[in-house]
Length: 248
Image (cartoon, rainbow, N blue to C red):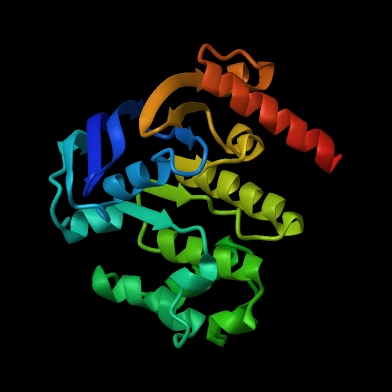
């Protein structure tokens, strides 16, 4: 469903992504992990069409994408959930307006029923429909962002650290919600995260990035068993285990 081949992204003199390549099968959730500045979020934004200056090849469902503005068909098929739910939602729009706007943009009828169903899918109460983002908790805001991404029926979901801005107590709930929705809808997804436990919960396979390069691809089974070929991936796994022991 998604093919990234020899992707390069530069911001001035900063070569942020260097020849990154990977493929994601239809219905698969694929992880991109690495330390801050490794280029993982830049790759995701290039796939989403939010980075226009890149070279290489990006294809979605066999259709090559150009590093220019994408059409509405692509925008409906590929949706993104951002890290900060408060920053990604319009502060002066109610939840009803936030969810209705994509339906208007894509010319989809039955807004009343679609919005009600979207709220139900992400386990938000009916009373949340006419509230503003600042009247919701962080977890509720991220549920609205997920509902907005899914309301037009995309095939691909791009997740940029979707739980890192949330309290630990709500992270598991949102992860379970994403897992259930992806399975129910047969979504193809890319998850960017620095948290290996999150990746292990949601993903089938993952790519490890360092200094803009993909240094290793591995299965989640190999991740859980600590079987990594690259020194950087082994370091990430070791650090993750150390952090887990501190939390315990």
